[in-house]
Amino acid sequence: MNDSPNCHDDVLCVEESEVTAGNCSGRTQGLDDRGRIMLQLPVLKPPGDFFLPMNVPPELYYSEGKVDPMPPNDGASLPIRGFQHVPKCKRTNSSRRIHAGHQATIDNGTPLNRSARRRDKKKRAKIDELEEVFPSTAHSLDITFLESNKVFFSGTSMRVLPNNHPPSDIILSAKEDLKVIDTIEGARMKSLSGDSVFFLIPRKDAIAKATYVNNTLSSLYALDQANAKTEVRGKKRIAVAEDDGKYTTVGLKANRASTGIRESWPKMFSQDDKEEITKLMIGCEEVANGFLPPDELRGFRAAKVLGDWMDLSGAPSRCIFGSLASGLNHYLNTHTDEDFFYSVTTVPSAYGLREDIDRYQIDVEVCNYFTFPEQGIAVALRPGDILLFNPQYQHCISSRTSIYETEDVFCVSLYLKSAVVGKNDNSLPHTATDVNSLKGKH
Image 1 (tube, rainbow, N blue to C red):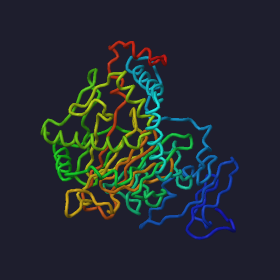
Image 2: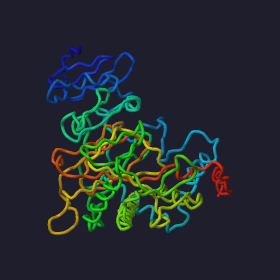
Image 3: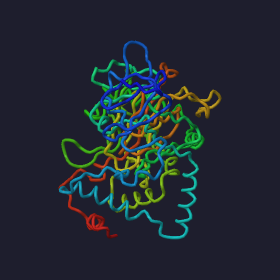
Image 4: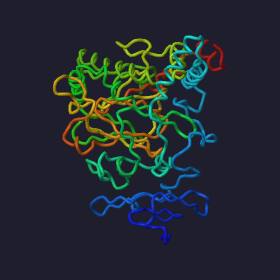
């Protein structure tokens, strides 16, 4: 037990391998015998007998060598993950194509003329205007803990979720166990190593082009009804419905029983609805492009041309995202994704629409939280918001907030799988462009 004289009520004291409900003022920190910083967090009291320290290992609360708030340059020695999933091996032709695309992205990001440099400078200034958010070590969760447990987040103040979970699952509250970023002005965050973790698009920009929203919602409902059952994403990424909604993925996919990439849509899905979903994807991407780091976007587009990746039918060839996932009233566990670029998420819902016109309101209640537990951050999302995020960092969407418990909310994600870049076919020979990209020559 912690008998510190600095103790006050309702604070969680972490010391060595013991977690106790003690009394600490603020976020007092100290070092244990292994030199790790001990964080003292508020004790949260959900109803019933469930109590967080009984369900979460004490090592969860350790954050090695960090302070809160985190200075932006303290992570110089930390590994950079980047924003692209690249397989470790290069033995197969498909994996080497992914490596070639990654190298081409790096090599082609530099602007080639004065006009491009001027545009880059203007765009960076626009991005820099977003509020910079720093990770919160007082709330961050250890990556090893996240990778070895199924961790879910409730969108309410309670550590409970719809559809009873097995006892082995860890259920936390995005509102209470993470630092909440709640703004309509936009925000951005970098990791200690300098990777961009997310960009929350200012709400006025996110919803400016979102017209005829009810048409979009109608097609999303049609997509939900087009499949007889929900899709399963595997053992590491678990999508859970709060009611009878389904989780569906469409667009470009790697064939599982054969080689190559295919474009997949439900058989019972109309062409009109497909066009409406494609329109949603293009619209979200256009907004997101305005806040993507210019060198990374330029490098990606060059890599796409050089690699000749498959395009989504009905979308411009310059489009980034070839796939969409939609979950009606769904939440997921924390995970990373094998994606080749930043991903986008948005949360369409009729509850956020204006009464006089088929468009979103500026001021509307929060419907979900998008969590980054490694950084201890939860980003509040409103219907129509657009979040651009790095899929190489642990993330997940929470369940609905209390206000939306009887309102439908779609969680929609746009992404490009690294398998699509690799073309999922080891029999395809490398092109001269692939070989030159791997050598850093163009």
